[in-house]
Amino acid sequence: INDYLCKYKGYVFAVGMTTAEHIDSLQSFEIRERDVFLVTYPKSGTIWAQNIIALIFELDDTDETIYENNLEKMPWLEYPEGHSDYVSRPSPRLFASHLTPALMPRGLKGKKAKIVYVARNPKDNVVSYFHFCHAWTSLETPKIGGSSWFDHIREWHTHRDEYSILFLTYEDMVMDLRSAVVKISQFLGRDLSEAMLTHIIEKATFKNMKKDPKANYEFLPEDLLQKGKFLRKGIIGDWKNSFTVAQNEMFDQVYQEKMKDIPFKFIWNI
Ligand code: PPS
Image 1 (cartoon, rainbow, N blue to C red):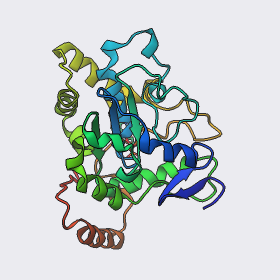
Image 2 (cartoon, rainbow, N blue to C red):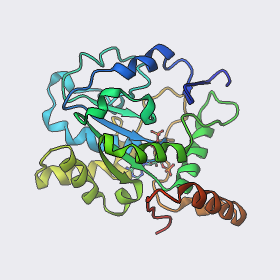
Image 3 (cartoon, protein in one colour):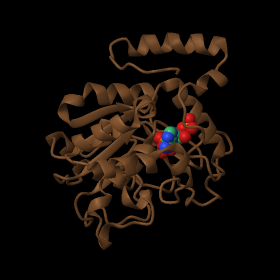
């Protein structure tokens, strides 16, 4: 597409961060029973859910599983840059991914491993993505990677019965973080004490996460991305500050058309 993005198997990847061979090899990537995959469309609350899952497993940490930051602890499946240990990592292995089902390991269909899928209302999603694209130091013109939001949600929802998958929304997390953490931990088969639950919720608030060098992604080099851009506003309804009335009407029309048979209910404002 340009110097920074390339299309492979219908999906737009960042150049230099993965290879066609790696993406192909994921098809036969061996799945283990205790593997956990966090799957999202970009800008849906990935690093937030990633932090929650990393904290849920924090109790088990041994010297071998204490990592410098959440990207090391729960690396991106499709972007193995700097992680040659996907196979040798001890269980439970934690992975994040923005991929569509067709590009994910086939072995996941055995329902052995668990998938947490977080979706966000697409108006806030696109506004978040817009700001994020402008923060990429290397991109001259903002461009969107991955797939379309509609395809992502449709594909995962249509194939849901083939996987062991928990669907959550970003809005669920904003409205009631405690319930969202409980839901995730129960799904992952982890019993959390009241103290642990309180600890996780405290660490996962927007304010605290923004200051947390393990979780805020400010460890990424500045020649790649401006600092402080992963945790921008963290609210529901920011689209109202960006969409014109005409854009909103157009969006609603497209949304209704494309989502008429997908029963997702989003909260658009609070
Ligand atoms: S990425 O690049 O795909 O990993 O981005 P992703 O993490 O999916 O999305 C970033 C948006 O998630 C918001 N965020 C949070 N909101 C509330 N609370 C917490 N703790 C939190 N952590 C991340 C982040 O602010 C981005 O949304 P916007 O609307 O841009 O603020």
